[in-house]
Image (cartoon, rainbow, N blue to C red; front, side):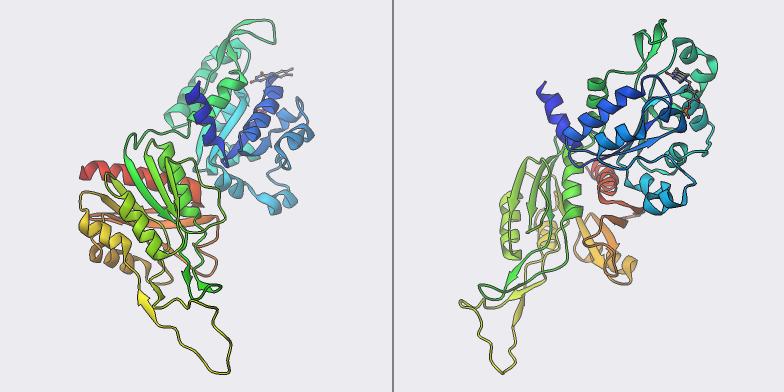
Amino acid sequence: MNNAKNAMKNLSNKHILVGVTGGIAAYKSVELVRRLREHGAEVQVVMTEGAKAFVTPLTFQAVSGQPVHGDLLDPTAEAGMGHIELARWADLVVVVPASANFMARFAHGMADDLLTTLCLATTARVVLAPAMNQQMWQHSATQSNAALLQQRGVTLWGPASGSQACGEVGPGRLLEVPDLLEHIANSFNTGLLAGIKMLITAGPTIEAIDPVRYFTNRSSGKMGYALAQAAAEAGAIVTLISGPTHLTPPAVHHFVAVTSALDMHQAVLDALPGQDIYVGAAAVADYRCENIAPHKLKKSDKDISLTLVRNPDIIAEVAKHSPHIYTVGFAAQTEDLDAQAKAKLVAKGLDMIAANVVGEGKGFQVDHNTLSVYWQGGQHTLPTMAKYPLACQLIQLIARNYETKR
Ligand SMILES: Cc1cc2nc3c(=O)[nH]c(=O)nc-3n(C[C@H](O)[C@H](O)[C@H](O)COP(=O)(O)O)c2cc1C
């Protein structure tokens, strides 16, 4: 029971795209959408034409709090949120209920409506909850479509067996809403890092000039927080040390809020013993004021200078003094990304580095990112996507390489 309750926390802030197709069970996905939102998920609904014969888009609009999507070739809908944007937005696509007709179209790679098109276009996991008359389900055409979809990595939840709306008894019932909800919540638990202790830093640091002034950088903390969430869902015991952000901390084992680079340095040293993996996603200021003025600096006609001194290089120190800890760094560069990232990997003695371009609307304070990941003897590029699915993919790479090193 507690486990089920904990798993529900996974739903918080998740982007769940619910596809609804033309089956008698379509009314049940109204309740599913409502329950997903109660648990903090953001939900977008995409309906097929068939689905609209069973439940009105207005009903889904009311429960999801978002306009419902249905048209692939409507120029106004495409301008608002096109199929590619929806496909990228989703952390998970669930089609509830999935009709025999939808399964056939998807199995054959058709892209003849919005739902089939975005199922082909998304990098998110796609799950179908089939519901249909038991003869339709058992027909060899439906069975071979189901098998083909599963071979291609699509997950099927259900159908359940029992009495059906048509009066028959057999396999073809939609799973009950609480079961679907639990499956969705659990689908974010990968168990890839079960029991592994992971220390993550995130966000910017703030360096004081005087009691009222400071300098900082444009890091929002979103990437580090997404990594902490993805690592916790992968079963890691996560400590997140964060500079000041506007974000709600994810459900991690231990959260430490810090302000300056020196605070972060101390917090990392305190938390380091016993850790297996260190991920330095914070944008730690390279410099701080040599002397923080004890009183507000007075304005005068003269120019003033501040002397800046080097802050500790936290990740380099971790890599040097704790070689048994698997260290993952980030390189935010405005130019010459690959060469700089590779040089940093070697110079700092890291196990892995994730490099991204920042500036000109990229990297900091945006919801999407692209990462080039390097390790000794390997490289992988993670294409542009939202920071949470990107974090999930980076966690998979870290887990794989950490295992290899171990
Ligand atoms: C009253 C009624 C109930 C239906 N229920 C189902 C159903 O539960 N599952 C199913 O696969 N098809 C069902 N169908 C058939 C689909 O609505 C039909 O195949 C439709 O083309 C599906 O379109 P879609 O897959 O694009 O949503 C039903 C049809 C009617 C008239």
